[in-house]
Figure 1 (cartoon, rainbow, N blue to C red):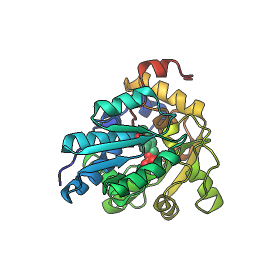
Figure 2: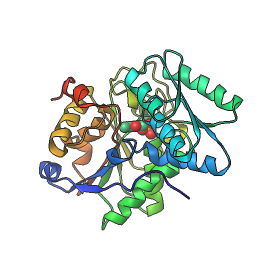
Figure 3: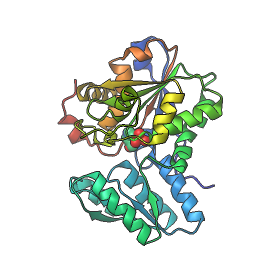
Length: 307
Ligand SMILES: *Cc1c(COP(=O)(O)O)cnc(C)c1O
């Protein structure tokens, strides 16, 4: 099957390895064509649909999933419609339009835009591209672990990633199982106020947050996917919350160390090694999934708090 994503480098980070005293590897998903790992899963979902004859992709994300869907449509010569809430910035809308997507601004929050997207996709017999809850997305995201098995001589001491709706987490855990790396712990990072997985694990049930109060909007799913909750309980997944300030400090330190800009949502994962959190202290090596994100500019980063 054709794939739209890029095989990304696994960078041995010397600054972070010095800081932690063990090898720290960075899986550089920020280098995907649309700036995040989302293209792995969304690309796969769209290619599979195109092979079934689907000509139209519908997304309800103004963020990285929407960008990936618009990019997939452009590359495959299909139509893309992206529903975004009124809170979505002009820059994002322009970026989506420049990829040839139709942008429909509707509803105050993602849930409203999503409901419209679902109804529209059904009416038009189009593919609904969910941002985190679909088996093809997980299969696409899991290819990241296949690449780790090729690049590392032995399993890492842990894999660190950030969690929004849990699509990345689910894909990575599926990939670890396929690799026979079932024992490798996953450190699941969230910001306080976007901590839907941590709250669900605390409650022992799939709970819905009343609101998203973190600035890391890309992590702002009020409820994680049922499959994400289930893999988080079946696998050794250690859930960690950091503050927006810690995520922001990590985002800035990472830009200085590696000269790569990532979203605050990715700063949450990097905070595991920049803070660092106790959950990584036991590991004899660490892989951080640098999930990336296109919603960052040099200006926005300079104007945000940092350390
Ligand atoms: C989507 C996204 C996340 C969260 O991924 P989920 O699959 O929703 O858990 C984190 N960081 C970035 C940059 C993203 O695009």
